[in-house]
Image (cartoon, rainbow over all chains, first blue to last red):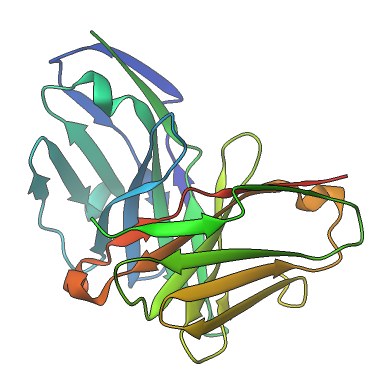
Length: 117
Length: 118
C-alpha cells in the first residue's frame, strides 16, 4: 500500500535559520512521482516541485532544495535562510499508477512551518 | 506566474441540490486541469484530472457520478457536486497546467471554493 509520512507536525524556527521538512514514502511501484506543495495562510496552494522516481538528482531552486533518496524512500525539503514569508503548511505527495490503469495520489498530513522574525 | 480563478469563492446549499464550481485559466490555455478537495483538518485529496475535450480521469475511490467534471474549453473546467450532502462540505481547489511550463509538471492553483451543505 502507498503511504506518505510527514512526521513533523509543526516546526518553529527563527528567521535566517535553515530548516528541513521530512517526507518518507512507501510504495512497491518502481515508477512514481513525488511532489511538494506549499499552502500559506492565505490558503492558496503553490506547486513547488515534481520529481519522477527515475530522477534521483537533487534539486535546488533559490533557497529551496530537495534531497531524493530512493534507498531510504525519502524526499526531504530544505529551506535555507528561512524568511517569515516561508511560514506555511507544506505537503508532500506520492503519485502512483494502480493496477486498473488509473492513478492514486497520496498526500502527507502536512508540516506547519512557523518562521519567527 | 499564470493566473487561475475559481467561482464562486464560497457557496452554501441545501442537502440534495447540485452545485457547480468553475475553474478558469485567465492568461493561458490549459489542456490539463486538476480538482482537489481539502478536508477540515487540512488533509488533501486529488479528485481527478480534467483534460480538454475528453473525459476526466478520476482518482481511485472518487465517485464519478457524484463529482461531475467537464473541461469544455482550454480555459474552463467545471466541477458539479450532484445531490450534495453535508459530508460533501469541503474546500475544493482547482489547478491548471500551463503547457509553456514544459516537463516540470508545474501547476497553478485557484483560490479555492468553500462548499457548505446544510
